[in-house]
Image (cartoon, rainbow, N blue to C red; front, side):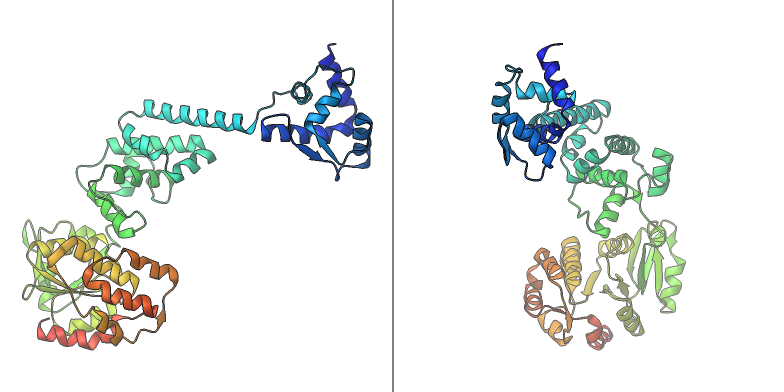
Length: 411
């Protein structure tokens, strides 16, 4: 038996040293060298006695360097502390720095292999590797991440040439209609990939932007519950004027038109004139319906069906008069409409004085007020600054009679 084996046998036989050895191992791996000290104040009396016997005096702290030096004063002289600890625990000591380097090498090899396996979207894989949710997914389950990436790579190779619903597309790609649900890892990766290759930037925290991004690749998230509310609007398909829109106009009936019914339309235009009144809330829409004028309600959000119909209306030269709630979300919707349709949009009873006329009383949280930072449209700055000053929201229902009077007068 060599001296190292003999030393290991000795200290293993003295179980009172085990806790100290465990602490010294952790200290070495943390520092990456023989250094630092171990407090033994919480050790048992037997453990303290064994340490005191080894050093020839009582100790409250044990220095790793001092332990190694004292080891040289025993029959085990010439054995380093690192050798002793490695043999004692039956495994080489690996410092935290070395552990991190190994983890980094493994991750680098992992993503390099993915890029060699899935060559088509290599540029996206290079970009997505550093995204936070991907890093977290890798740490939690590398195999699950690779499975999700493989699904998305197949999806990118099979993007449809005609419109298809997302669950149907997922079934075709992965034999699972829920494989690309947007809350799943594969769904998040799909959005990342589509955004990477898209011609414009989309806000992936916005439901409306996500739907529009998917639609730009002919993928539909929902085409029945995604609907636009309108009245006084005529529309054509490639077969001619749509009879449902005609009947609704003739009877001044409101329509909730699902996206699947909006998609086949090739034209949309007001029943009367060249103006459409666009409001945010269904209650205001219902009140204005009495005026028998062309109307669209966003129902609180610019969903894909609404955007699709407004696109068709603007294409026909229609002017959109927009009135919304005086809150951060309403101002952001106004900004988005102007960004998309430019001079075809008129802000309608939507200035600082209209805001004050609503008698704002509902407090706005700091989180909601922060949303106003993205409102940069010059015409909205006065109402934006007043809203920041008051920290309260006003709602268009409070000025509905004024809106109603305008519709009777033609805007």
